[in-house]
Length: 442
Image 1: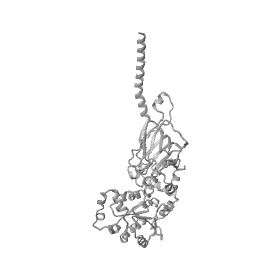
Image 2: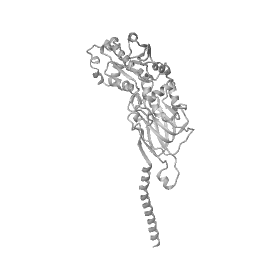
Image 3: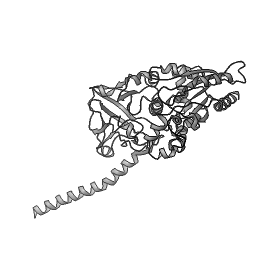
Image 4: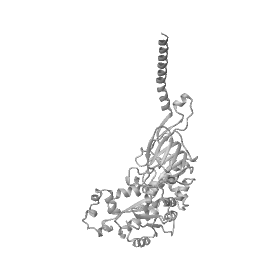
């Protein structure tokens, strides 16, 4: 009888404990969800942040807590890989591993913006993001870090700005220089080319993280860069309300560019507007540049030419472009230098044969408008393309470019971008330069 009473008391105690546990579970989960805020940041990247980093269960039992960052697996934005980790973060370059003090999570990420482009991502190192209960630091920093790759399409001037410089500006501007850049897939010449820009965005040494054997720790880390659109910023998507106007002012300060606006020919008596012709070396060359220059000079322009390349200082390019009122060139990376033009300058894009109007519009026409520039377009006719010296006028390459488009991008690029030069009809092009003069008059 005595043993039976003891057993009944034991069962009663066990039942009571189970009842209290079951009662506490809804309370714990309610407490948790009241303290967790799931949000969509200004760039459309889903980030879940904990307002109070002490877990509900620890609050109940009175235990202290370390920071517990919670982060999405960086796959919510269709263009870029981006993740903002707020908490104790450990970075090990030798193993390409990021460890965070958090729950049970693990994923991989390539910190470059064109996540859906296989050709770009094949050149980008994959990083593992894992969780662990502690961090083991050789070097501890008090400022956040931004990890990004210089793989992908770096080295192409258009992609340098569209994929890297503008996204880096968007991502880092919030820190006012109090942030450290960690570079993976490093290209030392790239760092040299954009050194002034990098130094104006961060006051700390740039770390080639792949070559570091020591473990670096940060209170916060951004993996990847924010991206809005080709060569541009969507102000409504920027949490800091940044725009291309802000970015271009940043460039003017960085390179000490003097001109903010173009001349008005009506008010600048005796001053000739300056036309800059962007030339190319390998493909899509203007084969009669000298003839174009003579015609432009006869209309009243001062004319300069430039062929930007890796051996040309970006500071020198910026100064030259900023000194001009009109810039013209065949569709290609050289037109990216319009970022240095003064406000209300005119960009003339020569669109080669090949029905690439959509590409021309997206890459340069739309960005020019966002930059407070005026845009003119000159679409060449078949007889202005050197392709007519290789193919008959009845050939589908000349007669029906869309038939080439059906074969895919590689066929389009090879045919119309890599193997085509342009001999402008100077008489026909004259009308475009006259229109630019009229725009400068107002």
